Length: 146
Image (spheres, rainbow, N blue to C red):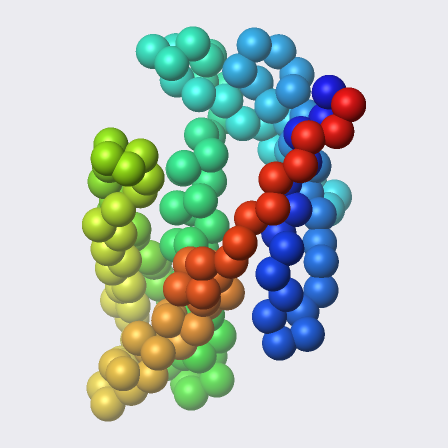
């Protein structure tokens, strides 16, 4: 049985991409992302074996790395030193409804003189594709194929 998730909403003439996740063993899954293979699992207390990050961890990693890329790009364009740049993203796992909440990103640019460009750095972070996707809350169409 194939379980397919299709992101149905196209924004501003965007294009459809696809990532496939395949079940390997118990709670282990293999994800093919372009030329890269990623193992996904859950912790032993949830019947997994912790062989890779969990889906919520991947989501947070995706958001924080996207913010870091957009901030680094902005800083590089305006001459701010990005050496040591990091983004830490904290979150809570909520139960009702079950979701991630209270997301807080902290951007550190220890060797860069941001000066009057602080608002520009924050705006660059807000433009990250993952952040924009969360903001737009696209519809996810689920289908089940036999």
